[in-house]
Image (cartoon, rainbow, N blue to C red):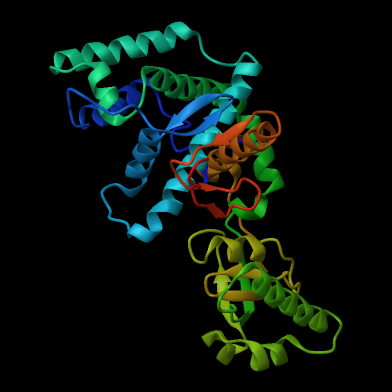
Length: 335
């Protein structure tokens, strides 16, 4: 099963990773003295450093600026991704699925050699990035081992089976949807959101019980412009048109069925599938998307199982996401 989260580097080739690694390391400022790397979390006692989080965030932002008040959550999301990778690496270690350490040694030696040719050293550049050689080796071990694991497990048969189990999501099916959109409470804290969701669920049940028609509910309750058309928002494809929660909920529906309440930034939606156009694509037509989904699902499954097996600790150096609720936890002084 394969971070969010998305292991973006899951299928990266070793040579490509080396080029990327050199680019990242050489881009670091060279200074004779560097402060000790800052530990932000530990997985199975092994540290994750602030420098690793910074690298992940820089790779995602690609030069785009981020508002200061948004940065803590973005950092926490990157930290969560790094933790999940370490958890998966612990799984690979425990099942003796990691690559031969000599492969990691060779990559480190090649990196050091190329950096030396550029007039710097591996030690200096790692220090400038705020990570250690042990961290570099762990990163290499993760990438090489995960790629090897995927090469063994993401087979043609697996892709075909996943397609058969999720055919609608990949065969080009289109679903026509109408919606009731209810407003989000302000402030949208946990209690008020729960109350609003309960209200939406009650409205849905009234429609199911025949006490109210969908059209009547749209006219009386919906705040969306689509209420002028009975709530109709047209045919949806599985990806790209609407926020993922709406797409996922719509494609779980059979014709004339209502979805449970769906929460997005726009409000609380109740969806009705009014028409289904079956698709004709085969699994081969969607092989790339299937592979991505299988990788993501596998990664998430392994990481989730490992959370019950492997200790994860957070320091006071950086905000993190609560593993159970996903809420942002600000660092606490003195932890």
